[in-house]
Length: 259
Image 1: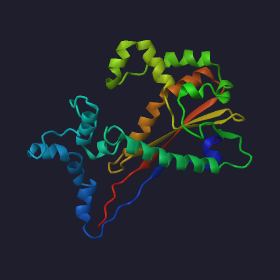
Image 2: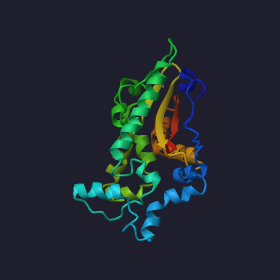
Image 3: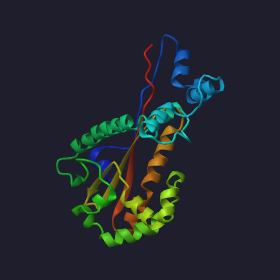
Image 4: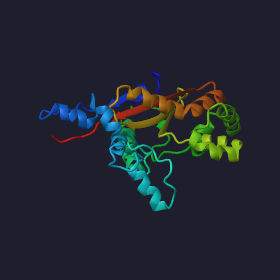
């Protein structure tokens, strides 16, 4: 890894966050941000209000509104927590959260591209926009790494070993073979960079997360690595002479409170 993207741009595993200090009322700030003993309160506020009779359900109200607008059932709503409403998993916030994700990642991506050494052979093959594996494998750079047939074979072998998430079981049951193919070719890493001279491919993934909880960095890195496990494994099997790495960028997003 020392001779790949890290050496070219100086990038490494990233944690971007801020230390919040409130001089006016530190204890109140801890409760509001979810630090210390306030964390439990912040994460379970909807549940608490439901028990007090102030809310009919602990289910996310934003998700409920989004489903009602689409005329869909509001059964099985996710619990309304700070983490949920700040994630793309919240149906009412998905568009906003995703837009913020792309905006920040584009800035990081452009900065890495600008930091390349003048004589660098590193090429960012998704500089204009992110692409799924179906699009990436048709690029000339990937065709020189391995053939489509080799990648298809290895991808199928690896995909069947990866568990199907519960929310996707219905789609899997309709056509298991098609499900595995679509899951692999539909995988969409945030970026990819290739150094043909060194024969190194870097798959880039960007994650945003609230950093209130200790250990959030490890959790998001594990999530990112699991997300593209089949891509890295299939490419390694199809092109053993090449080196494949995944580089994760995890950004902490602390609550902002004005005291």
